[in-house]
Image (cartoon, rainbow, N blue to C red):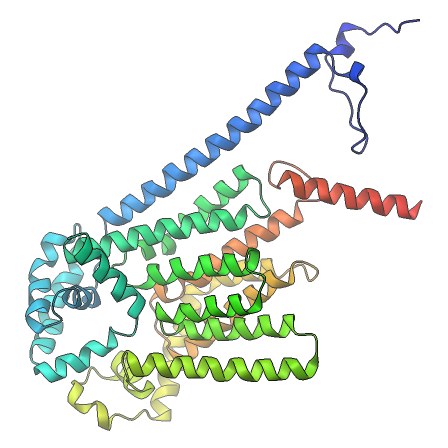
Length: 432
């Protein structure tokens, strides 16, 4: 005896009872048609989200290329791409207004007192002065490779490296967020992070900051989600100081955290931590000797106290009073101006104590290194701390996806939602 089904009921989607298979009679033609249409709409949304993300990211990268920001330090890097002579620096000062579109305040300031000071150096003093800019070998090697192999002008080479680094940062954030968010949500959050004014400004600077961030974020992604061997993780972290020397703080602290988590035995843990500390100190010494070979007192005095000629470097000393005065004034100013938003993101990412330990360790290390860097090098320029903002914002987005995984919706990945539903069903079955 057949059961009559009304036309209204035939158009309803069959209810899914916790993953149990539905009988074939439940899938009538209207239901199958509606399911196919919903699947097509979902695929269309994913493709559209990815297309808009790529379009927006490349648009921002093109904007960074067309509207770069030059600083007096940029002219030093331009001269280093030629023959690293004072004549090359003078040519960079002369060509700055034609090679850098937009406002030329940096070009004008470099062409005045800064340029006169540098041109007054002897050739030996100028070679010593360039050590301040030879501390990022990976950046200078990449710039030289682009300049000489592609036969591009020096200014164009630096603009290309900064804009490509900006795009690499955007795609890395997307890959990171796709681990816990749906494709539309990951694309939206990634674009919002890349549209933050400090991040856009980072891509516009013709300096190593964007390049260093573009190297740091892929290493973080690989360590978090791809590399499982501790040796591989430590090797990748050891590359970061080649792009920027102060990355040794981040690489060393996070490397020791990874060793601490991966070594359950107490005695073996102490030996590994001691070996890692010695290794990172040795790496820092080697980088210092083979790049700039300038002591910390010279770096601090040159940056914050006096722009002394290189002939006075051997007699330079850092007084404790001067160090405390600069650290308390500029350090407090830097924290008040640039640390509010990233700290807020970091606290949100640390809100759940039961969440992923690796992600929480990353946020804690980033927070500690950012504040520690202010104490060692209290520069008020925001570009020195934009990496902290990006990591904290991405971690907060990942944590938001984990928070919403139990409630469902378009924000969370479908497999994570299904996993949470399965775990809740297993809990209910165990309680019953």
